[in-house]
Image 1 (cartoon, rainbow, N blue to C red):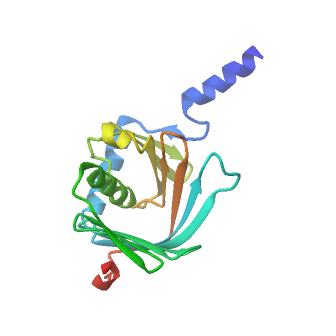
Image 2: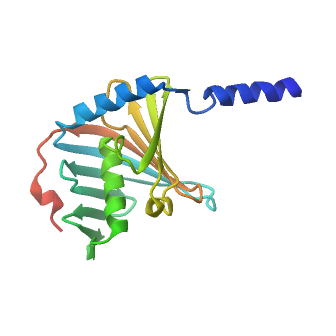
Length: 207
């Protein structure tokens, strides 16, 4: 039993169990510079997504599907089409909601809105690496790089415990995002059919 416990501790110490091998400081800096350089030229992202919401009190995760649109200025739209018709737009410091035809506006002129909006758009594009509000550690896991972003900001800590950004090898934008709440419930978003720097019709962001 003693040797069994030592073996488990060794795997955990090496970072092999479930998260890969931790990047060195040099590797992390090089990766961050690569992401920063490549996302500077990013004008838009258009992608389908599959969202899975894990809640501890439910036996099965809740799955949703839809389409996401993001502009370089942070304008963002999530449009769900399965299982329900629902869209939410972050635009001009407002939240615009369309719940199956029932529309509403929420003013975003507050600290919480600004931080959450920045978190979401930055997670999708991968631009959170140089954000001083997060401590960043990266791991190499097979053909993926997984960035662990732990918020330092007290406001964000109320809603988010850690953000995991998954990058496929040689890609500069994320393939998956996992947002873990303080309760350990989490949301996993997987992006498919992703298109970069495509022209998005401005009407997409109309409310």
